[in-house]
Image (tube, rainbow, N blue to C red; front, side, top):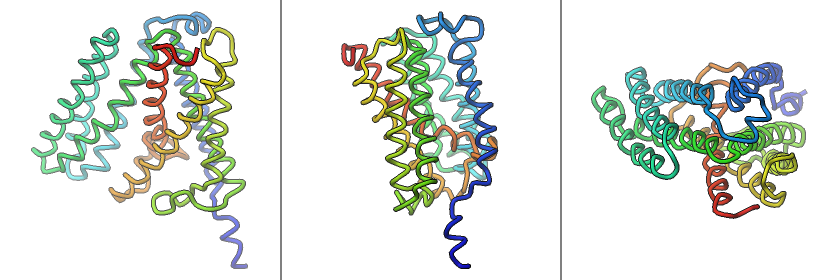
Length: 292
């Protein structure tokens, strides 16, 4: 009888909650990305204003900052969260209203200034300044890359490809790792992740990227899409593991309890935060002539 707990080590009990949460989160992300008032085919073919997209990112930034304040600043979480939110939103709004590369340079320059301001606020309320500054440095690049990625030519396609590869990596790692199990990937920080799930996630991320590039109108070669899928899959896994290490450092199991079956928002988008930076780099390389 002692073998039963070993055989049921992975807990499938929250799978229904994870699926239900996905049915809410995925349509929300797609709706905001495609735009509220434009036919989807127009959104896919060109660039247009995306206030719902900006709103989604702004709300996400605020929620992530609240979770970061709760983890890193237990004595004054609200003040630290407010400082981190304000610093990141300045960066986001600079990027949203500006043209590439001039205004985006100003947005990137505003990032260290915002981190310094958040650190000063944390110091004033007897919290660790470095943790507040890192909260800005951790969240802001992903938010700014999300803004820039969608504003580029065929940016909606690239943003959808980002979602497809990231979600594919998550689903593939979860499903294949749960079925095949095997040696642990990094048991010190994330005891449930396995090497089988790692490679499964990479395969599904590559498949998702290739599938996106095979659709009409998307001007990207299949080999480039497969490579991008692999890179985005690796970044997704790295972001997930890094957030696990951060939670271990702060002594928390989840970043929050906002999303049933997942924990906090940071637990849901940890991989995306690394993946979007890689995808933005791929998009910049494509803009310069690679992958056509």
